[in-house]
Image (cartoon, rainbow, N blue to C red; front, side, top):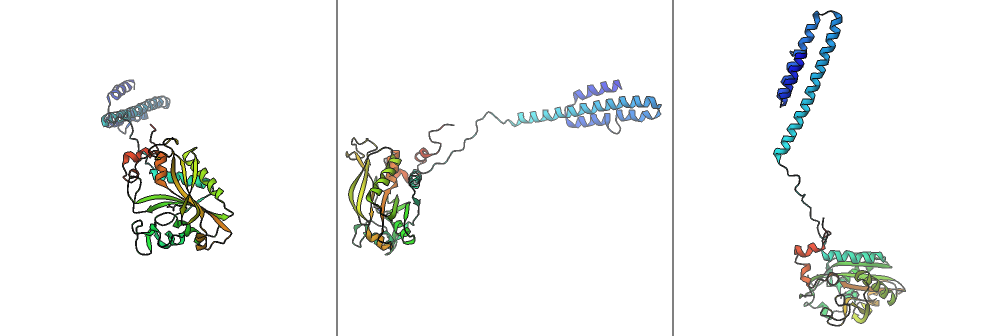
Length: 340
Ligand code: PHE
């Protein structure tokens, strides 16, 4: 038995693969193996010796089986190790970083403005870009001879249908379907025959409307000053008398120039102020057109998103919004300016 153990020990050392190990196993503990052979020899022995002999063989058998199991694990480990080396994966290569998409600066500005008005209690409504002449002009108290209705200024689809020239028709759409009070802002695309460094034939506006009982011009001023200072920071705000057919009285609103802080520069034409929106108390004719009772009144306002975005982000050409140059857009990425 000792010589068999020695023989096994020296053989098992030189085994390097699973197949040879299998053969070695069967030549010792297999059906015709050396150990099995011992069991067969036991038959002729007296009972006392049988027990002692049997215990020793079982011990040796257990030892051999253990060693073979260990060797098998060693081979597995070795094979895996060799495969890893041969496959040559360089685990020190840096991972590929997925790029984060960017929200378009116009969308970003719309979301910021919506958030401010929602925090003040306004809803968000959406109107169509292809609109009836009736809603875009007529019901907004814009008479037939008004210059905005000229073919020079408006894209017509046919005599009664056009591409809306402002978001104000959404006022009509909401009021004719909703009993007062109403309180909403409405962002979207608008179209005008106009194109230069600050004008694009398609641009974006946000409309605002609040109708209830006993609404005063001071409510309009309070809401708009609050909004402008939430959006632009602590800027001076001033109201100038103006004219819109669908509001009376009407005003245009200026903020202190963001670029020069009111000192006067090229952007503000050396006035220290920038015009940012139009507004006014909703004209009684408009309220009558949507059959609102005389006890209701309110205010409306409209602003150009591109202008807000240009001022807030220091963009000097409106074309940048529509060219989709990835270098421009990436600056509005969630990750812009951050390093991993
Ligand atoms: N619709 C106007 C424009 O496009 C803006 C405006 C909206 C003015 C609401 C007053 C009230 O210029």
